[in-house]
Length: 403
Image 1: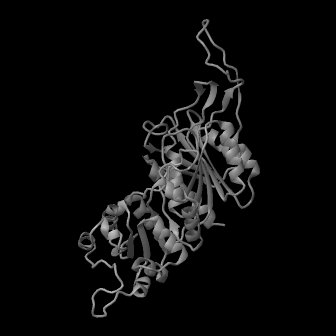
Image 2: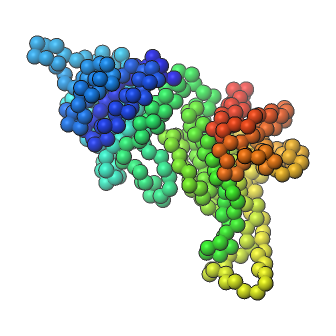
Image 3: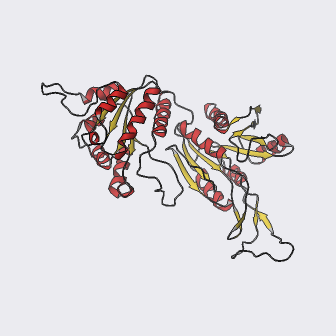
């Protein structure tokens, strides 16, 4: 939690400077104490009076506050703070921070900072994509700073939404999670977790496919919860319309079982654990028509063949240090079928849900699950998928605690 935390908020000369007001409101609402340090260019976009009214503290901008020798101590600020957040951070300030160009109060404060530093870049896409900017961000990461960027993952280029500053709510959430993990380290901190989510589509022809109703909501909630606890997450997502938010989620978009199989088997060898939440098609057409199949005759026969069994393959690959979690969606003999899958596929535990539970499973924002393992069964009440994700990740965390 941010209650009682001392935050230095650095503001630079970006059009996104107005969003700093929302950041301050959110931090203060959580009980944080905020000291603003603003660059001369930043004052062209937002007035110190506005910022001071929100923080109840004078805004620091210049080295000297008056002509009588009174000065602001960047060293004192560096010792005072529990964290420094630079939001928005322009390409110019990124470069100065990366190379130690201490020509304003914000940079000297940064160079004196003893606490963790978080940076939310804000610039146009061309500036963001320039090799110099990318190199500067890499340098800052190598110094141990955290770069907070918008997460989307829909374009192959990986640049959708990049450059613009992340929304204040997500910035504050990221800051809260990071400081919480520093103060109370999670068993998942720095663990590498792979998660599959959503459906797969198996093509019949260029316009038709075999699929299912999975929305991916459960898998995405699991990814966010793992990332919130400090894990590095690889999310392999089938064709869904959801977005990721946490900086620690690396998203790989796939469509078919074949693509998901290749991505999952490739990522698992580098992972500490995997959670297989995707609703993967069990069968695919034996052949895919190159052109749209026209309506003709009274019926159409589509011959199917089995797809890859991703869970079985990862269970075979699994080493003594790795964890593997599966999901089972059943319509009858739920517990018997889940227990069989648990043993056959070498899972540490399996999450069972049922279509008999109305208002859960596909497309729903809620779920009701049971967790089965070699040591027994735990039943949970119906609740939101984000809360269900907490229960599941608590169970996963316990496996690492008990090592």
